[in-house]
Length: 342
Image (cartoon, rainbow, N blue to C red):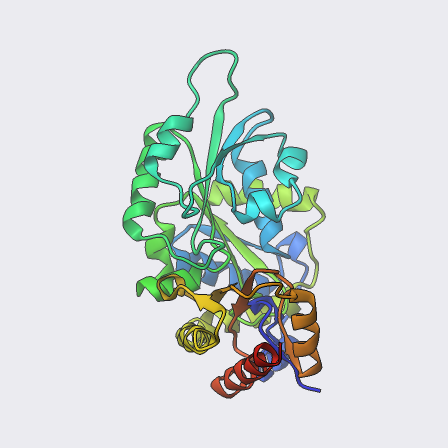
C-alpha cells in the first residue's frame, strides 16, 4: 500500500537518480579524508553557504551539538530559544556533552531579538558563567522564516561582544526559498551553520556543518569523539550532491503545496490554519472541535493510507517531494468525512 505521509519531510525517499548515484559512488575512507565523494559534497556545501569548509555528519542534532562543543568551553552559557530544536528535541545534549547551561529566550513568536541578546550577555561578575554562544534557527521550528534584517541585527550584537553565532538551519534552503535569496545570504550572519539534506532535499541520511577552516578542523575531532566518523560515507554523500545540485530549486513546489493544503484545511469546520504563518512546507492546523479525539483521528486516516502525527489540538502537516496535489485532495476529503461523521 502506498501511504501519503504528511508527518514530516524526513520521510522523503531518495529519487531514482540518487539511488543510482549511491550505487556507483567512488569511495574512500572519510576518517582518513580520502573519500572523494564526501570531499566533493563538503566543498559544494561550503560554497553554497559561503563558508570556508564543511563537515558531513549523520544528523542535524549531531551537527548542532558538535557546533556547541567546538564554540564553547566547559561551564559556558548559551543563548537559545525556548522552542528551538536544540532545547526541545536534542535530549538536553548541550548540558551533558558540552557542560553548558541555557539562557532561554521565550518570546510568543519564537524569535530572538537583539534586545533579548543584550539582556542576556553576562558581565565580568565572578558569580556568572561566560556567554559562549548564540544559537538561532532559520527557518524556525514553527515554520516561519527570520528576515535577513533580523539575522544581521543579531549577528552585529554578538560580534560586538565577541560571541559566536551558530545557526540551526535544518531547513535553511526552505528559508532561502521563502526569502528568495541564496542560502549564503542567510549564512553570512553566522559563524557556523548546520543544514539537513535528509529532509526536503530527499537524501536518506545526513547533514552538513559549515564554518571556517579552523572551526571545521576542531569540529572534525568532535565528530570523532561522538562516534560520527564514517568510513565509505561516499555512498551517502552521492545522494547529498544531487540534493544540493538538483533538489533545492524544487522546494518552491513544496511551499505552494503547503499553501494549497492550508487553504483546503480551512474549508473544514473546526479546523483553522493561520495563512500568514504558512511560509515554508509546514502547516500547523488548530483543531477547534469539542472532545476531538486525535488518537482516533490518526488511526482512521492511517486506515485510509494517510500518515499524520498525533499532535492533539494542533496538528502539523508537512508537504514533501512524495506528496502531490492529488494526494492532498484525497487526504482533505478523508478528513472531511471523518469530521462530518463525528
